[in-house]
Image 1 (spheres, one colour):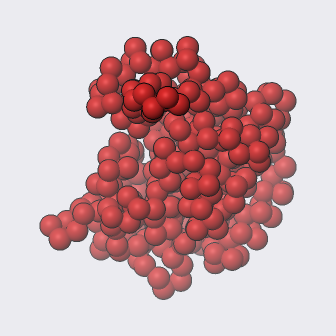
Image 2 (cartoon, rainbow, N blue to C red; image 1 turned 45 degrees about the vertical axis):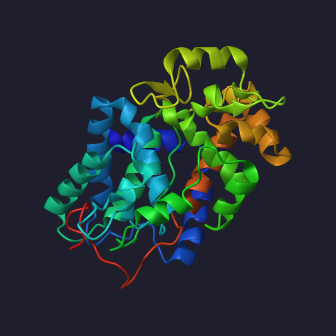
Length: 335
């Protein structure tokens, strides 16, 4: 079932072009499509079948698993450092403030255990997380793209680095563009990968300052962010009673937060982006043009192709290959 659904989904895109994109990008990063073809030939099938069970049982996990991969790649590259637990002598990435709300670690361990049973010590946690994020998108009715493999796992993880390097939800386009550029990603990647906010939910503290703590033009403090649609802001204030409300969740793409589609861009175009970083996309000519184009609903296949290409690029950021790093037996601890 998994393979046939993948084949049907991939036929909607110019897959040959994506294979070329993945191959050329991977060559730079020393990754390879079919890397495990001799050492663990069923690796992708095992990940895909387990992911189908995970998402069938908990469809809302698609967003968090995609987010795990993002947060991994932006700190030390895509090396699974986000999965490592803190130790007595080190506070790891997962315990950094921006990562406190990350979910899906148990699902990664579950998939890794299946791979260890089939092919002990072969498939890295970094590759597992990269494949899981792709499959999460596909299972949420999004695009399929080929994933070049061969990443190895890092041994270091730093909460300080995570706090300093992750793109903040409150960031404007110049700041976000600078962070993305430091990872070899451009302005188009920024606006395209922001489309991942079509999946998932967010806790109030990540956006409630827009509802209660904005300074108005006359210097008044405590007004609603004027870049936020007032009707939408009123709905959010009913959910989030204060900046510190940690109990309530809001859908990042209201009405379709479990489905990968282009409705996120329609919300942003109507000034209903949840984060300041979403609203900021309307303040830059390049990103605004893209938001408004995709928001028409006439270019869904273009967005799916763009998202696939940007995910391929992001999945190659700072990877360890060859003799670098290791292949962890358990994703939460170095060997």
